[in-house]
Image (spheres, rainbow, N blue to C red):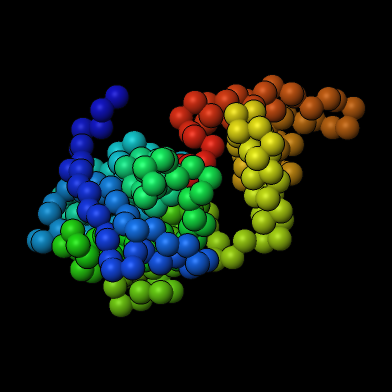
Length: 248
């Protein structure tokens, strides 16, 4: 279903002398950033920056459509709602599926990208597009981490931050689970991505919630394995729209 408040797509290319320097030492000669705007124009209304999660894109109507529109949380009558596709993602911005300087796609040669890199590129891209200050930065999960980074690195550029389901630092368990997910992908790009997605889905839930979701009624009753089957099915759906070398 098409959202009734379709956005205005835009894109810019950052190509500073010496390339775009990344935190862990990598360099991208240039970076294309895809963006989408909703509601009023940023020149005559405050701008709310919505940051997408790991599998999202710049089209807010596709993942937060329920809160986008007149009178809603992301009020298109009062604000300009902006979103950029994070670098490393596969929905319009420079990513492992983009051509490298040698003409072949980057693939696994793509340099490591951090939250700091994502937000620094986002800031520069918005500046080129004409957005010089943000009234509010909001996001969930990876988007929430980007929102936190906006508040930490550019406090004078954003009037406030709403970070949902996000942390400023991963726990050792989070780092370990991500490492296991990456290893699964290295072993088998297709089946491993399904396993990695399952690990991700499990990491979002507590033991208590899993017991409740599986309709556990006591130690004498078996766990409802249909819940685990649904997690597996979610992993299969993710593989259909991802390349294993691409963030999004």
